[in-house]
Amino acid sequence: MAVVTADIGPGVRGGPVSLDGYAAGPNQSEDLPFGEGVDGRLHTWMFDHADENRAEVDRIVNAGASIMGRNIFGPDRGDWDLDGKGWWGPEPPYHAPVFVLTHHHREPLEMDGGTTFRFVTDGPESALAQAERAAGDGRLAIAGGAATLNQYLSRGAIDELRLHVVPITLGACERVFDGVDGLTFGIDRIRPTGQVVHMTLRLPAR
Amino acid sequence: MAVVTADIGPGVRGGPVSLDGYAAGPNQSEDLPFGEGVDGRLHTWMFDHADENRAEVDRIVNAGASIMGRNIFGPDRGDWDLDGKGWWGPEPPYHAPVFVLTHHHREPLEMDGGTTFRFVTDGPESALAQAERAAGDGRLAIAGGAATLNQYLSRGAIDELRLHVVPITLGACERVFDGVDGLTFGIDRIRPTGQVVHMTLRLPAR
Image: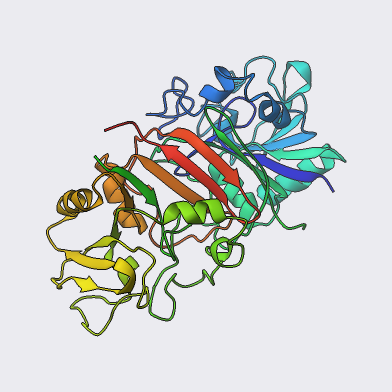
């Protein structure tokens, strides 16, 4: 079975979380993909200090398949605007199938570089089964956001959780671990850099 | 001015916090000082693995003065039962003045080993001023719980925050950083052990 990992939060190739557990500010929009009040501060480590954080940035990519919530795919809400191709530009960084959780049907969207977005309307279990088949022996990545991560954490579907903790407090919006109590992780690898504390945590084998 | 530090949560000599930011389970009582559902798991690193975590355990003690919420002093609620001397036994580990925030007047309580509990009824600013005077050039420690820490964080009164993050989720009770958004910390020292991730964070100078 594919090893399921999660790098949570929005952001290019996975993402960070604030010290108080938020993965984005409120009111995400096309102009503010990370929400209000964040001002890029959750992502400085990826964008402005990529060399110092290279090991973690590189580990986020190269999954055999990914699952994400609709808000991580793009700014679109409700019925699809079929001209909209999401946040990720013509060549998204996934280079593999990406399963997008949504309540609204949409045909698969093939992008440059091997990324195909597949829109799953029959729930997270179905998305997990489809993504595990697609990943094969590779890694299956839960690409966020917090609500999607929490859903899979509460199902016991995640083997390894990578939290990239940025030492700021945000105080609003989707929170990691909301409604997911009773978990016990093992501490695998902790690496602080100047901007972020990278925490790799293990969950018991399924 | 005294350097103000905080090791948050209940527990002997300061304490830990869960991965989702809780410093205790709900319904603390004399029988369950850390609340329901915790079962000592937040404190294993202190009690069962003290050697491995010696540096951090030792850094928690030796403050010139401390401030704590009433629930950290003892199980008593409402009007004082003057026979009750708190959680800490006849010789508490503080060996210095401890200022306890409460709405109910009580005379100072002198314990063995140099600890005196002083009960402050005129608010957190007054407690801070009194404790800073008592600490002199020494360190002033905010000894928790989460609500007390949050109160002083929101006043900008804390110089250094030490989070002892235990990789479990609890999902209830007092949460660190609740109502305290907009903070930006510096990453000072991060040390994982087998049971806990010790994080020392700096706040801007007052």
